[in-house]
Image (tube, rainbow, N blue to C red; front, side, top):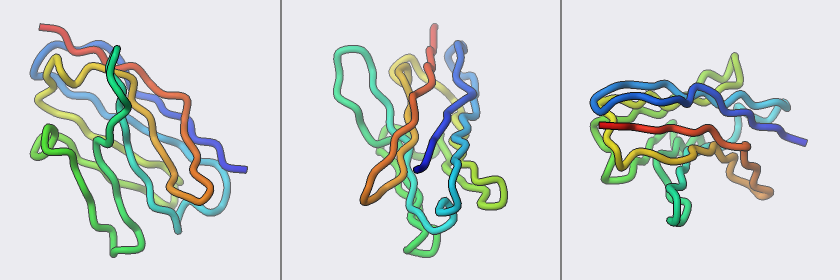
Length: 116
C-alpha cells in the first residue's frame, strides 16, 4: 500500500510563493511517475504538473502555470515537490499529488488560497 501526504499549503497574497510537498510511503516511489493536480471550487480536478521518470525525468505543465511552477522529486526522501511562484487568485484550490498506476494513488490534498 502506498500513502501520499501533501503539505505546504496556505494563504498567500498575489505574487507570493509556496512550496508544496508530497511525502510518499512505500518503496516504489523511485520508479513511479508522479503528478500534481488541483481542484478549484465548482470546477473539475485538473493536471498542474507531472514528472515522468520513465522518460528521463521529463516534466509537463499546464499552460496556466508554465514559467511559474516547478515540479521536482527527491527519491532519497521519497518526496515530490511543487514550487509555486508569482501566485495568482486563479491558482486557488486544493492541490493533490498523484502516483500514476496502475493502481493510481492520491493524497488527501492541501489547500492553497491566493488573495489580492
